[in-house]
Amino acid sequence: MTQLQLPIAAHGTVSAPAGEAAKADGIARAAANTPPDWATACRAAIELMARRGEPFQAADLIAEGLVDEPDSPARWGAAFMAAAKAGVIEHAGVVASRRATVHRSLCRQWVGTAAYRTAAA
Image 1 (cartoon, rainbow, N blue to C red):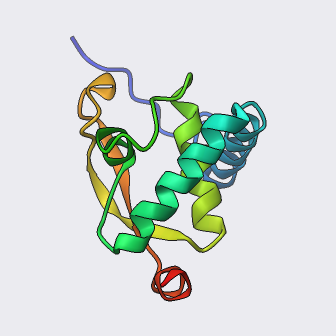
Image 2 (cartoon, rainbow, N blue to C red):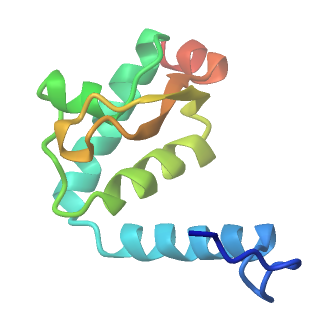
């Protein structure tokens, strides 16, 4: 069996700007629909982990009992991106997730920014 190979990408299927726009739209929709109590608890959990200065991921927040799984996994991206935009955390690599619900798929790892750790001290 052979695979069909097209000599060019179909229009609109490969576009970094379109991908970034779709990501931003998805994050905005997730943030707008996140229950406020979960958002507040998650933000506090991210800030606590950020102050430690050690790399962490969403699974760590759950494992430490700081926040429960959200009603939708899209909530994680919105929470971490908001904290990153606020200067609380920064990207610290990609690792296998420890959350069983995502079957060890790759996820971002985060660390508190030096500026946030200094300000929070």
